[in-house]
Length: 339
Image 1 (cartoon, helix red, strand yellow):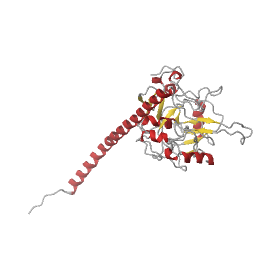
Image 2 (cartoon, helix red, strand yellow):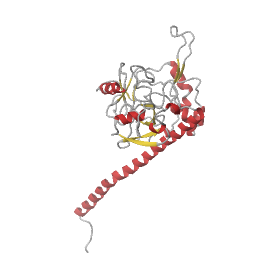
Image 3 (cartoon, helix red, strand yellow):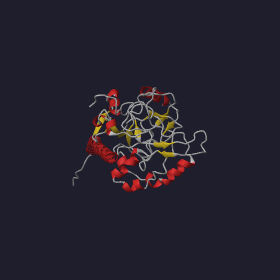
């Protein structure tokens, strides 16, 4: 009786063909999955855009990203203390317009808040106390603030979508730093549609940034921040300063975007200092709460980032976009003609 079957060579050929087909199909499957994640990311920004428009309709302005009241008597801090650290993020103020009214109602705005895990700043008893008051809201996971393409840490309380604060390193402009304080949002005041003189459709409001690596021993250039020094005044100086700061062994901050609750370029704000996914690592000033510095738009979306414009439209910007064009999109009052 003759038995039929595969020879060893035939079996190896079949297995080889299967592996080749799998290798050909895998990139297509991964591409399809990333396309779905990118679509979800765009939808998240669209929802933020609707919330932003709802906020403006009700308040005739856009959210402020920080409110700080100092000590009444600077020479004697024990007398006449009037301290309100209202470092609530833009995101907190948008909660009611994202169907998260119960979370918003649990926030104690009267008490204020200040971040507890800053770059080389130890938390003090007051900041810890304020954080405990608002702990109910802080620990809520808000899926609208999380990009599905970012598989990094801090997925419980983190944030991937940041408000645009312009080009320069500081919250406001002065003689030496004329390109600061020119973004869609201000860190010391509110903006209104009338102050976006470049036009809402020509000014970026939100974009993406990857969350930090969470590993202080092994910082990741795409995710983390390095320490800059004082004396940097303009966007161009900031680019050079960040490049110098990211030397091997330099101090780094790896908790970027770990909270959606607090404002700051380390968590919920970004700058148009350099083009998306720029090669220069980001940097901020250590020993500062709500630190100045550079926070670049970054994502894993294959050479681009999604951008929410002031008029609510969601676009994408390629990594190769001219820096001058990207900067023009990042300013609200630069009088540039950009489409």
